[in-house]
Structures are given as structure tokens and as C-alpha cells.
Amino acid sequence: MNIYVLVKRTFDTEEKIVVSGGKIQEDGAEFIINPYDEYAIEEAIQVRDAHGGEVTVLTMGGEDAEKQLRTALAMGADKAVLINTEDDLDEMDQFTAAQILADYLKDKNPDLILAGNVAIDGGSGQVGPRVADLLDINYVTTITKLEINGTQVNIVRDVEGDSEVLETSLPLLVTAQQGLNEPRYPSLPGIMKAKKKPLDEVELDDLDIDEDDVEAKTETIEIYLPPKKEAGRVLQGDLSNQVQELVQLLRTEAKVV
Amino acid sequence: MTKKVIVLGEAREGALRNVSFETIAAAKKISGGGEVVAVLLGDSVQSLATEMIHYGADRAITVEHPHLKTYTSDGFSQAFMAVVESESPDAVVFGHTALGKDLSPKVASKLKSGLVSDVTDIEGEGADVVFIRPIFSGKAFEKVKIKDGIDFITIRPNNIEPLAHDASRTGDVSSLSVDITNLRTVIKEVVRKSTEGVDLSEAKVIVAGGRGVKSEDGFEPLKELANLLGGAVGASRGACDADYCDYSLQIGQTGKVVTPDLYIAAGISGAIQHLAGMSNSKIIVAINKDPEANIFKVADYGIVGDLFEVIPMLTEEFKKLKAN
Image 1 (tube, chains in turn yellow, brown):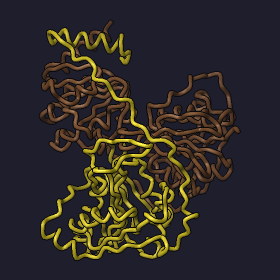
Image 2 (tube, helix red, strand yellow):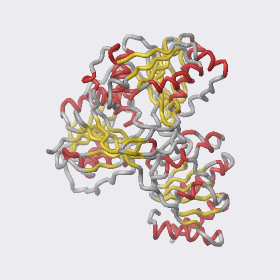
Image 3 (spheres, helix red, strand yellow):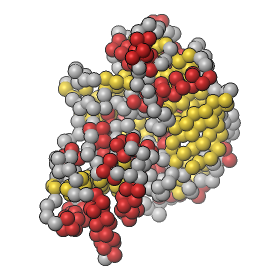
Image 4 (cartoon, helix red, strand yellow):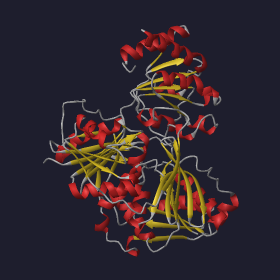
């Protein structure tokens, strides 16, 4: 089976966000594989181990993303591809990203594409379904269970806490929800092997893409931090009095009940 | 410049979800005085159309088809694109719900348009409209403009006030007949979640538990309080990882981002990832045994104490309040 995983390099969830000069400060920040993409990588490896084939992890951005690709290879992916857009694109949005990824994938005949259901930085959750639409294949988002028999696929997906049980077929793009699996940590032999696995780099020139055709449709005009939440009042006194006071405050001061 | 804006109403179990009315309020701002058209897709949605007009839509279009009984991206995108082709809107608004999140990228792809997802506020109107949305799960915000093509957004439930319901408002309700074919997904079954009622992302009140609840049973007092307040139960990653509850309840940078009017955090220490998911709630109450817990730094009101003592007392106190 020909399996692709779309991955994104994101800030570590531990990071505080610092804005200066209207941009998010990246200096000194730790980066990780988007946590939802880790579920996608793990699932891809499990599908390959059960059905045979090859797992290719695909990302776009700058050379820094090679580190996350190596981590995915160390987990067990077979190949990695970086679409390096560093020199060609200043601004990109979900439209841009999907156009480029779909263009790369269009002649690769993937049977299964996996991605995270959302990236924890931008948080739009658009790129996976957009890529599927551009490739004219079906997609299922926020999956928590995946079973493949031949070309038939049985899926359970999370819909606001309900579980939807559905049937579809390959080729298919799915996006991973928490609970799909338990992503493995790269083992030491895995890390050693990963160094020798192929990591290809392509640029927009290598693809059939004119920069103007993928120009972003949206523009971020400002980034700012929310007003800092001031610590409020810790109530004092006898516990039952505190509870009574709290209910009064919620009713008369905060007016939320 | 005025704009024609289409909103997609969303029904669940035969009733319109509140976010549908919020999309109308958002559409009014974007329209700058132009027309707001409500669209309803389903197997039987005709009766819901006037409700959309009462909440401010100028007219409504329904597409009814047996294949639209349950949502699939193929069925709904075919129906919605047929409406877009007949109406040529300048802007489109969906709710940022499970359905909206799944459908909007496909529609945006077909329209070759941008899409601003998870909008929490709108500045300006008409041609000068700017959308505000959280990034890094609410650790920061961005203002986004659409440079090219139609204004397509999804709005986060509970953030944009619906307009007042006005039963005297009238408007045209028409139906569009659409051929729906080639559905590649077959929904076999929907297993309802164990916790009833209110969805986390739309809840006005959330009672959330962390490691401090200690077990699956430990969530019971939290559920009782949430039910009494018409709210939903949430959880921290710690509680989910410990198997006290399902991952669908998880609030945080991985998990759901919520903005209820009242967030009661019980036995939650307040890791940065959890704070990202809830710190934009209007009022936060923290209950924790540890007076040094990080959660107190973002709480409006705090009680230092054992949640198993405090939560039942709180439930009793609210019961008294309700009785009066």
C-alpha cells in the first residue's frame, strides 16, 4: 500500500507565545511534530505493518522541518519529503499549502493519506480535506478507528463526542483524532536507521507550480496576545461559607448563573 | 459596498442549533446592509426555515433529499454548491462545528477561495470587514482579511451574539431541487456519547475535572453539578490519560478549546496546555486542594479545598438558589 502522511512542524505545546514586531517570536522555541500528526504517523506505520507497502512523510516549509521528518523516520516511516518553500513564498495560507501538497501528490497514486485533524498552531484543520478535494479522493476527518480490508475501509470517527461508524473505500484521506492510537517513541535503533533513510527535498520549481497560482487568499494583518487574565480572589473562611459566597458572587457580581 | 451573504443553518435531532442563529448575526455584519440568505440542507428541514428568518435572515432556501438525512461531505457539498451556483454570494458563513469543520474546506476548495476558520469576532463591516480568530489554541489571536475571492468563514459557537428573535419577521422560503449522487461514505450507525445533552463547544457552563477526580466514579458529582446548571462536563488531559473519562471530553491545546460563560475547574492543576483551551472563558472558578496550583492564576474565584467536599456543597447551594 502506498501511504503518505502530511506532517507539520509546530511549536511545542509547552511554549509561551511571544509577539514582537507583529510576529510570533520563534527564537529559542522548541519545535515538535504537530501532536495530531503523530497519531497519523503511528497509524500509517501500523497499516503498513499489517498490509505491506511504504510510508512516506511529507511536509513543507524550511530546512528546519528536516528534524521533524527524521523523527518520523525514526518512528518507522520509510521515506521523507520536504517541499522547501523558504525561498519562494513569503506568505502562505491553507489554500497555498493545499495546492502545493496536492500538486506534489497528484502523480504519486497514494492509496491512503493520513494527516492530523488540526494543527495546534494555526488551528484551521483545512489542509487535509482541501488536499483530498484537489486530488478528487474521499476524506474522513477526526477518526478514532481505522480498519482496512482490501479496498474497503471501516472507520469510527468522533463527532462532538458521538461516534459515527462508517464505511468507505480506498483511495482515501483521513485525519486523526486523539484516541486513534498511542504514538510510539522513536527507539535508539530507530534513530540510527533513520539517518540512512531517504529524505528528499524538492522546490516549487520541481513541481508544476507557478507562485502566482498559489498566492494566499487571506492575509494576517495583526497578531496579538489576549489581555492577561488577572488572578482573582481566593475565598477565605469556613468552607460552607466560601461555597455560599461563591454562589452569590456568580449570581450578583459575575452574573453568569 | 453591500454583500450578499449565505449562511448554513445546522439542525440536530430536528431542531436548529444555536450556532445557526449566530451565523446570521455574523452575516449581518459582513453584509454591510446587504442580503442574508439562510440555507438548510436535510431530508426534512422546510419547517425550520421560518425560524432562521425570525432570527434575522432575509430569506431562506431549503434543499431536501433522502441522501441529506445524515451528513456526508459528498452529499452536503453537492447540495451547497448548487445553492452557491444559483445565488452567487459574496460571502459564506458556517458554524465551526463538527459539520462545519468537515464541510467548509471542501467547499472552499471547490470555490478556489480562502477560508477563515474558527472566527470569534468580526470588526468593521461590508468591504472593510476583518476577522479575529485564536491561534495556538487561544494563546494568541490574529486579525485576518480576505484578499481575493469570496469572504468565507466559520464561526466558533458561543462567541457572536445572535440577533433578537422576532416572530413578526417574514421572508421568502424557496426550495431548490438538487440531484445528489456518488456518495462515497456510508454512515452505518451513530453511537451517542454517554454524557447527555449539551455539547462541550456550545455549553454555557462547563464543570471540568482533572487528576484530582481520581477515578471514573469521581466524575459523578461533577456531572450532577453540570446537569443542574444545564452545562457539560469536561476534563484535563491528565484525567483522560488516566482513563477516568473519554478523550472526547479533553479541553486544552490538544483537545477542545472552549469559551463558556462559566468554567468550573475541579482538581485541575492548570498546565499551560490546559489553560490554552479554557482561559478565554468569561468566568473561571478553581477548586483545588493545592493553594499553589497554577489554575488559581487565571481563576476569577478560587476555593482551596477538596473537590469531593466542595462540589456537592456547591450543587446543594445551587439547588437552594433554583428553589427560590
